[in-house]
Length: 565
Image (cartoon, rainbow, N blue to C red):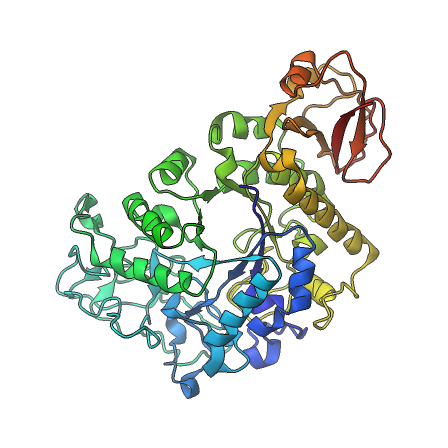
């Protein structure tokens, strides 16, 4: 299960324009294209030890950019978030975003060419599936022959009907939030504080009101999977609801484009019974498909893995939150122990670990940890604690801090998914499409090299990919130089390879412990307590050492391979 995933926001990844004007148009601020993800870019990504690339924001979504000349209806700024629009407000499930094409009418073939190019480099393709909600302007003009559009046959006189695709508020018209200002000081296309929708539909974040607030997902509408929210959430799953079939057909369509898996948005907002039905349906047709669920309720993880048939779930409320605290010098390593011992016990190899993604703040931002080197120990743990997947977000490897107010996105420590923007530190690696890191500082080159060494080792080491785990905190916490709040030590091992992993989360303290591997741990690894061993740091290409008296610099990580002398 040791997938190494590189997430990239397709709109931002290849953008070479550095103007970065707040609320800037696509012409002013530029936009990355499918074709910008070149052979050289993919070769460099592959060289990081990556196995899967998640192309984020591919499906056509609502936007303020006008593509009427290409036959795509224009959107109303009153129900679009940001100049570029949210990639999670889908306008046509059967099409790709025109922003991402060099030639708009060839947009699907340009995406298909990217999928093939990615496969040619030995990488697999993940893309988004957004099952819970769509844009208010949803209307597919690219749907295959015979496909009936979402909502086309709905009985709009009923708030709920099992085979309606949407939820309605009969007799009530949709009201745009009064204090919504789509483009700040500028005027958006068709912006007048109104949007014609009667009857109003329920909003994507389960708001059953014709007047959602500006803080709601008011630009989206909720899909109906056969749950009557207004009447005690009574369920109507037999016969199979129409929405289930339509969403299955959408997944089949994209699987037919030869993608290798889906990152599924907000999976807990969709009944687990749907996933229990649809994932096996897809895997019958294409057995190797991967399904990753964005999930936030640890109490439901096991349900969505076992009953829902997900391959992997986000470990956000758990390891991410605990590593974030440690990077901010707030938590202790006891939080990590709690994750493997309690929260993901029995299914840790099915939890996707990460330190950044498009929803989370950048490590290097002042809102998070400021210093990107604080990721060094945390990323080692995220990558090697278990045999499940690990993910890197583009720009993380060069310390992108997400500075600036992009427009709809405030200066909040995140790289905007709503605005046209250049990502400055990433652009130094991009180097006008050379993808050679030519403009990176020595510190950035060193950081990127660390990620490369760690992830390459993660993807190739048998012990990390499929080995067992043994924590060594209790065996070392009485050592006078072992501060168990800052230091974390564990073993990963198989019959063929034994690794000792030790990290120091302290930003300013050097520790010099002599580590102890107790006899029972040696026995568990199949090693003799009567033999002598060497310890070689695979992250540092160092010489083998004969003893475990270590110097652990601040924000350091070490992965020692244990071998008989």
